[in-house]
Image 1 (cartoon, protein in one colour):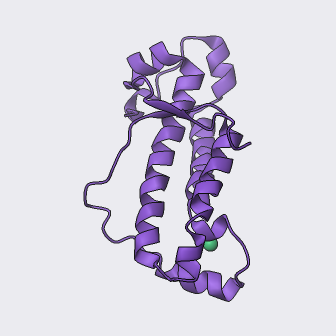
Image 2: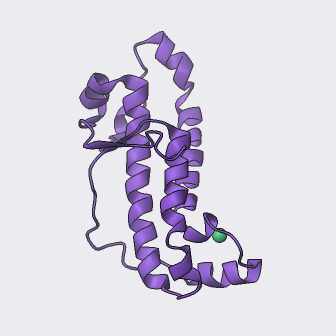
Length: 157
Ligand SMILES: [Zn+2]
């Protein structure tokens, strides 16, 4: 797990400072990337054909109310390529669009989308640190473990 308290330590490597910019820049970009990862997990954002009214009607019902319960963290999957990762998320998410739109399986699909978005976000953040710092420092500074597998490795892009 990323310990945010350690992020305000200045990187000792000047090249790293140059690459990452200030902490506010880093966190803003992470926020943007996180938004896209989570947005793509909404199946209707990875499919098309519905009207805006239909989209809004379904989305208004996609409320996740049981987030307090235990969820499945499937372990750190290293993102090899961020564009491929986005393609994979959309590909997986779009497979639930039919159940969501035609069958109105809103609760079931919302739970799947939530769970996947949380895992994808955790993988995104850990992968960014892993790639920026290298495996050893990512582990030393933030306790990021060795990945259990890889995603965004080019199979879908
Ligand atoms: Zn939407």
